[in-house]
Amino acid sequence: MGYLSAEPLVPEALVREVERPEYGAVSTFLGVVRDHHAGRRVTGLEYQAYGPMAEAECHRIVAEAERRWPCRVALRHRVGALAIGEAAVVIAVGSGHRAEAFEACRYVIEELKQRVPIWKRESYADGTEAWVDPTAPGGTVPTAREAPR
Amino acid sequence: MATTSTLPIRVQLFARYAEVLGRESVALNLPAGATVADAVTAIRSLPGGTLLPARPLVARALEQVLPDVPLAAGDELALLPPMSGG
Image (cartoon, rainbow over all chains, first blue to last red; front, side, top):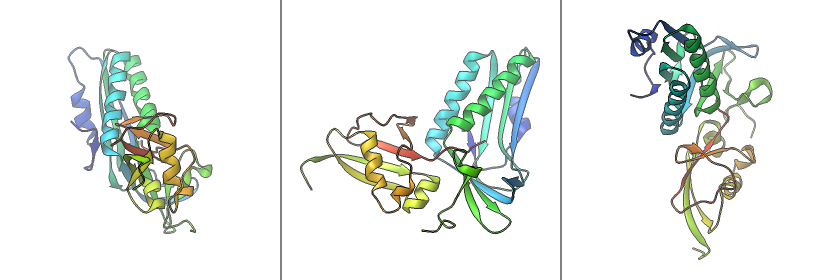
């Protein structure tokens, strides 16, 4: 099973993957494409990934969460071009009780953002575009097409 | 080819790093004993390479690797821009 998907994500399918008769809680997280970033109007974006490493890192994060909490985790991240409002990432965590479901879900999204080699390029209403870079001032770096050389 | 250059490796570039260097992969032949940091230095000496940070994230065999790690012939490195998934 792959963690990366070029097709639209179906949250209900991930919920079904983590359902068990003994589970009383399923926690879900959806990361959704937002129409603005740092005061600019976003019209669309594209996710690129280092596929083999992204798959390996997602697998490691899921395994860590399932070791740390008694739970089952389903995780999917989109790649390619996405429109406003589309789900970029979906996480579903099934567990006996809500506390560990919430905690494991939070763990997976925070680790994913830090560790999984996926990159987001935003397109703006003014026709420009930029790479999202949490380490850069303002949170973005102009693409090579935009930057003066 | 110089006899001291005995360490052929390949470096994959992604996202903004591939953009500024104008390619997604670079073959290097480094001196024996070269480290991850030496590979980064070689990449940064290419046209556009100074737009890369001096200490970018680097992966080998699908895991992050530190700059002082020695390289082996045939290693495949990946230079990773700051991640922005999720």
